[in-house]
Amino acid sequence: MRNSFADEISKIADEDDRLVLLSGDIGNRLFDNFKAAHPDRFLNCGVAEANMTGVAAGLAMNGLRPITYTITPFATTRCLEQIRDDICYANLPVTIVGIGSGLGYAELGATHQSLEDIAFLRALPNMAVLCPADPLETRHALHAAFQRGGPTYIRLGKKGEPAVHSDLSDYRIGKALTLRDGNDVALLTTGTIAPLTLAAADALTQLGFDPLVLHFPSVKPLDDEALANCLRRYRVVATIEEHSRIGGFGAAIAEWTSDYGSDLTALLRFGTQDVFLHEAGGTDYARTRHGLSVEPIVEAITREINNQKRSVG
Image (cartoon, rainbow, N blue to C red; front, side, top):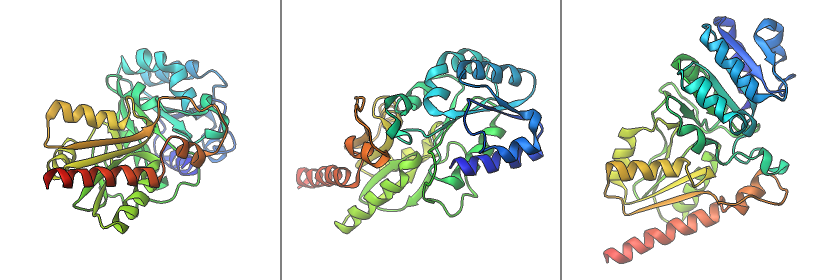
């Protein structure tokens, strides 16, 4: 994802001289092409992310379109006050890009894991929250954020994410994308955990079920129409995300359901637990420790579907 981001941001900068890239002391070699073509539009702000955010706000107030980039907790949690007061309050066209979101840097411990960022940023007025699933969607999300003209957060993985999409000609902020159609149960997902969600759908298919997989490119705004149709059609819905269940994508769906109502019988929310991991391990290990793997997800969904059938019978 980060390579796709670096490549696409260079292309946009070639076409629009308002783009300015601010880095929190990472990605220096990653942006070699950008710096070679636009040396006056790359600012390494060092390990001073709050200052970087304030600088971005100032640039935006003077007609530029700044993009800040660093490891997600340092792009979001560390400078939440500046994002809120300097960017969102003035509704400025600043794009905040967090790299290695969720458990992308799991091996570096809790300081580098970002399992609260969606909760923080979707609560801010004027902010849009985009969670691409793969490198292709990263490119589309970047263009959409740049064109949006308001505060936008893009939550990226790190590298090596498998392709989920083959065509995104209909991509737009606030529109859900069907990755797989089905009739028995709806799996709603966002971000880089989409491949795991598809793997869970495959496992459910092998058990005789017919699952829908619906990917939400943006957690804020949500796709109201797709949600209304989904919650009208399916009695059992599961949300799957690489973020805390508190305040994240699943919580946003639960809030939507409470506000607008539905015939939904069961909403299962799969996300990270309300704990810090005090051990080292890679992304797959950390996901498993949080219960984000195919087996427990499929087991819980199967149990709920069977409970529904027994209650009806």
